Image (tube, rainbow, N blue to C red; front, top):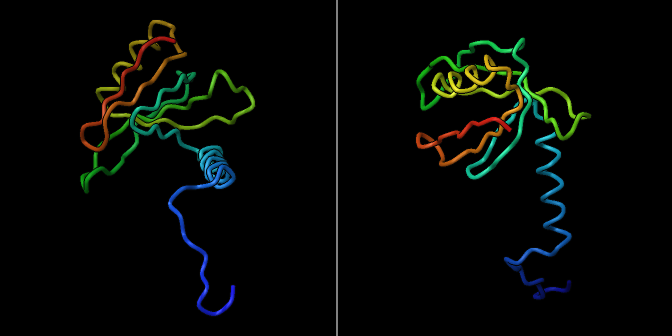
Length: 123
């Protein structure tokens, strides 16, 4: 570009740019040791009933106890084990299914922040 010339910036991303963003997002998810569902996300997870524990966590500046489960993706056996942490209320639901011998569960996230809800049911 010569003096005075500039390339117009656009808000529309090219397909290559969109693909780069998708690749980065997938890479971050793959590298993370934790499952983090975004509002509207749905995922099927295999919960290992021998690998779960209460953990201290902080939300909105308050410390409380969450329940961390070791999970894998039953549709991707090559993916390493990850952790999924939930509230006491959601832990009760998961534990009820695990006690019934159902370890592959569908998890849907609805809402965000304090309004987050998880719908948990057998896969």
